[in-house]
Length: 597
Image (tube, rainbow, N blue to C red; front, side, top):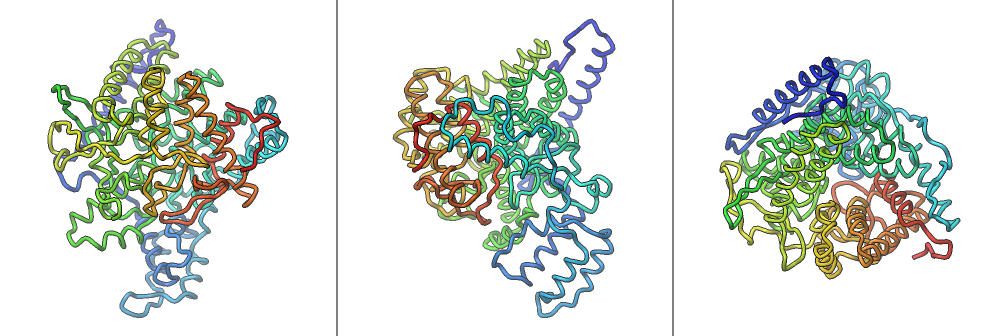
């Protein structure tokens, strides 16, 4: 396949440079696919970790024994950075007085040790004043006429300053003392315990930054993510050494597409396309790709989440070990750890979507599921690559990716679509698919439960441009039970997990609303605006009550924030800010419309 060739084919030097880049990319792709082939192994591939991460996991476990479970956040300890080198710090840690069978360290001794040998979590990121921030940008949200809503929108806009950081000089000079990765550009973090840049969060952060006219900040985020692809072969879950074992929903191409649409920055496209091709290869490598044969005997290739990991997640090591204690066999534990990390790779950590038994967390089987939304994101990537290749005058890459996209669209419809329900349903693989060339499709393997992800295909032009399909899906969506007073519920199952009922999440509201809106159907636009208004109101009331934007919301009641999961509710919050600003930019807010619940 040809890749990003020059817009001026007569320039031979540039042409040769691009062909050299192509050969390197092809070699990297082949190496990636080979190194990640599970070869029918139960355990599969495992990414390397660092001695620092391994040591900080020991500190995390000791801290849990010493300080107890109340207000304990395991991530805090793997975010600490060293004041001295690792060997000196380990030696001091090993020499701490211990008592009892578990070797418990006293509260006082551990507090003194941490204060002496570590800088606080988050200290390696410093506040950064974005060069393109102004208190009220020219042309900001022109459709927002209500002064109360406009005033609040400016406060949300101002949160970009609060969430802007840059990697400290200490990380750049002594990266071995930090789990934070040395990114080249400033970042926007989600907020609270999420002190570093995250992959899929960044798409909605960028959508909000574009509404705020902060184009340089948006481009800097993309530059950082490209740096991660160049360094690791894929965008990491987040910019930490302990996230190198997995990615997150692949939306880098969508970020580049949106920025280009606003700025016409061809150089950004030229810089991004090689990384997008490499990312596409990653998501179609052997560990992710599964072939399904439909009833007519046609083969379809689709992708799944599959973390390169079979151990406890370092940022949640103590939690994962406790969960895995129900298993006796080592191979069972390893498979559970891989499924936990793969659920984290999905962004939906955690949800009954990934469980064989919706009431038992240890039945997670993420790697045995072909998810609707992941394949939609990859389809979007394929369409974006075709578009961006066209921008660069590369007709052959454009045509190749249009063909690939058409094949994935057919696969999505053949494997996921349920015409009777009017939804696309996740598909559960039978045991051993990883070791077979293909699996024959069976209707009974579709997950019949209602999840917001069942409607994500509407986000893509190839689906929302079909009026009859949109009408069918819209009727199904309205009767699904997912639409509530304050937005779209993630599922109908109240499991206590955060990606289940009653929580609603900004990304899911946005993709479904935008898909309905872009269909062009009057009824669909009306439904989209209704959901957007409900979501804006619940964010506004929640902000007025608590003084913060929240990571997730309880869709049963206007102004209530969400809960559940393995950490306390977080504020900040990158993607919530981005979606509110995007909705206000699109729909506005009339002067006479109430903002109260």
